[in-house]
Length: 539
Ligand code: FRU
Image 1: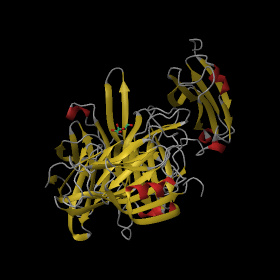
Image 2 (image 1 turned 45 degrees about the horizontal axis):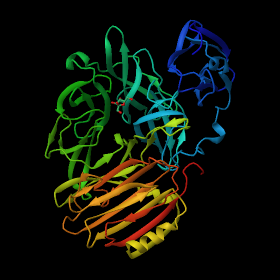
Image 3 (image 1 turned 90 degrees about the vertical axis):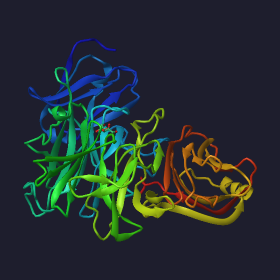
Image 4 (image 1 turned 180 degrees about the vertical axis):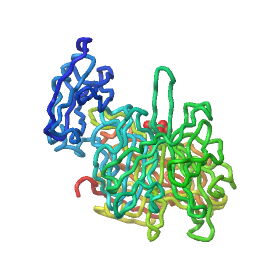
């Protein structure tokens, strides 16, 4: 640790980025950037005092030509090493780091958690996300932003929302205000609206979480925060510090905006005509964080629909929704388990597409030496299908994944030994593996990768990776697996998406390949498909 006396530097900004060195063994301290006496950015950072572990950057192009004053509480060596450049440090080797996921979105630098503001606008998909630009662990919440035209290849475009006087930028959603109900529209095209939570932690009042909106008139390139923020402050109503994560969408039958908001012990429903003035309607207990609510056809029949509601863990209920209140027609179900959290789906997907497309946060571990932490799970399509147990939510990788196939091989009717011989030949570790397995004279089987059990089905106890599960047709003994393997993650979609397992590869450096195993080897592999995948980062 350096000297305990505030240090400052003045830098005339003539380059796009400030590069800052981070050392994880240092303490977090507050950096502030000011213009004259006006603080314009504040964040905490572990500035290095010795050898940096990695470098992070701050885009300062909005201050071009002005003199920015940097202040930090202690005189660490890293403070003097901060420099401006038109490149951020490490830019040339980004996405080539050993443990960088190759077909999942990760932020170039820093930490990500929840996907935010998933919205489609005029040919572009927008993925915003909870972002700490200054460290590989959670802090300093901003909204990072990336765009794509195919849901597969993403371009990171930088911070969309910076912390402000109302707090740091917690989770929320986006929608296109097609009818200009907000009056924010300035040009020909309707504004994009972000609804987010500002999280304030003050010494006098403790935590206050308020709901705010911001708008863009350039299709999501730049955002202006609404001058009347916050639009909801319900801390006192609920006597709770937990009021966050607004999901907004336009409800056509009532011609109103709906906000589903996590408050205290469940999800509340609000209505608005203009996204600024909100009226509380009802509350449904039993969910925690990141609300999602949408209507889906059952078995593809547009005339037979149900509504799905969930929170951050992904446990869901089916029911009816009249624009004001959710009426459950089922208890809780679970379609996903493991290192998954805070998923949300896209707003404003064109009717010609009509899919309900979801992104979830993949909760990763820290991989040594990496300048980023966490990942987005592969986008999936959600659907409702009839099963032996009634209507259930299904989750499958979007079909666009096929663009990434580099090689594909398919075999049928293999013994366990024959299947293992085929998969031993695989060289790549970026894979989609599909298999249909029948248990003949055994109780269970497992699939291993890099020495780790990534899926284990036990017919006797009806479990998959220790979670209760029965096969699509309970009496069949046949299980289908659709497995996505990236550098540090595994997603397993069971029986065409009836159940999803998400896990981290604990030893991503292991050279051990795929293997199928059962106690007696008495299983039959009806079908085995192996698809080697391309990286999304080399277009
Ligand atoms: C869920 C969550 C949200 C919150 C955000 C903060 O992971 O805790 O409730 O808005 O993360 O980063």
